[in-house]
Length: 307
Ligand SMILES: C[S@@+](CC[C@H](N)C(=O)[O-])C[C@H]1O[C@@H](n2cnc3c(N)ncnc32)[C@H](O)[C@@H]1O
Image (tube, rainbow, N blue to C red; front, side, top):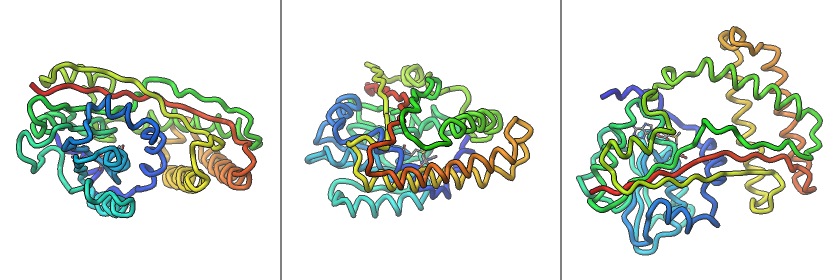
């Protein structure tokens, strides 16, 4: 079994990545639907694989009555931070996160009614080995699901009426930088399995023996003027999500491979400056309902039953 992806994740501590992006997927007004698609009942014993800081774990815990959820992750930083979030949210009686290696789980066979994950199986160097471990710990008749970000679909975007002056140039540079990133950061660099690409997961579920397989696509969208989101969350997203982009770009700009693949040092500088301008614009205009550029991305949930 190829476990090399563990090297990448074991010390991960990028908490804000998950806390700012995952609430867009797992919205409170979608909980009943997700319970149906993941096949979770409120009294179930649930396992959430590769849960990071546990945004999905907490989302599910809120819908459980007599049930309970355990999240696992290989990064002790995520587990510590995630358990604090669980405690602060008043969910400690029905949720916890533990350190586990998904290639070799310590849970006994047939322990959980439902096993789920979001964006976990896809980061593994051996997707099938990770899935088989999740199936092993699921009870016969129980269900295993994966929520998957479907990267092959283009993002739905509308640049809208946000009056931030640099927006067109910013979007141009983002696309150009992303193209260079995709050339440099291959699945081999990320130590991911290149055989089971994310769109093939339903087939992988069948190959691993799961029955009654279903696929449910869904989209996640965000706009800074969408009243679903609190001002507190919008501020957090402006500072953390855009701040994180800037932080990543600052690290990447010294890598000469970007210039070789069509994105220059000068463009990095311009892109970072434009992100900072946008951040300032959004903070200054948080109350005026002006920032109506928005985007949405596709995801899907695949589920199957263990015989
Ligand atoms: C892309 S993140 C997704 C996190 C989370 N499920 C979410 O969507 O917010 C992948 C997660 O899988 C975890 N992971 C990677 N390899 C693992 C392994 N062998 N065992 C357990 N967790 C692992 C990483 O630490 C990381 O938190």
